[in-house]
Length: 349
Image (tube, rainbow, N blue to C red; front, side):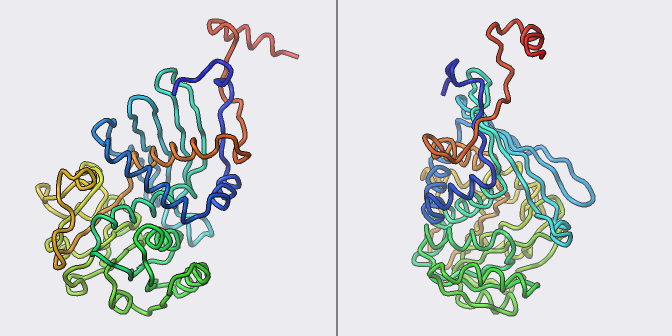
């Protein structure tokens, strides 16, 4: 991935507008499948990566985080916030941008928006996990929480797992109407529901995606029967959970990176020795995922830096020889690397 001298002065930048153009050029379901493939490939080489829980700065109204990782050849990080109160102010709950760099030179090779891209990679990762953990033939999903992530989750499950029906519920009926409207032409049966209990009727996959910054019980223990797969992806942070502890006790729980999930995920409420399986171990075949039709599987997803790294790799590969980026003059690159001051002097008009 080493950068050549003729390339290193300019850094490709993918704006929100160009990201949306790229999605439409590729096709959203194709892009979700492709992203899932990149994530799966990186999970198969999980042990090569530097891994650390995200670096978080918490406030009373939200969190700002950095998510870094490297495979030894490339380095990537994402800046991301999570501010649940933003929705009431007409702002996004989550915004993000990311950077990919060459380890050999340290030079950035990509800067991109990641608000849209995070929604795509989160959905792709959920569906990748469901491919390994959901009951065979699962074709109906309850989508509890119909905010910004709901359509992406639904389309990813359709593209990767063959989902045919989504049952929607949100405490705000306007959010459900928004989601139903956006999915009207998606080739999937959309059912509006008036309660979480109604939403989970007949669903083999239960997705919870709420953003309140508090411990909440979106699914109580008696709501969850045997044989389902739970995809818990809500706005995770310390003090934020969605599932009753009894559900976790009855489930086989799969996570990305335990040291991070124990801080931010559903398992934060469980004892420190609560048993979990890392998802990469299932993907590589080192450990078993779904064993039988009665098993409850739970993907306690909080998002991890390797997934963002995969998404950055994918975007880097896809924008080559396209018009979906602009070059940014981000790097001071004098002819003589020891003469940065001389470069400044010569720039004076």
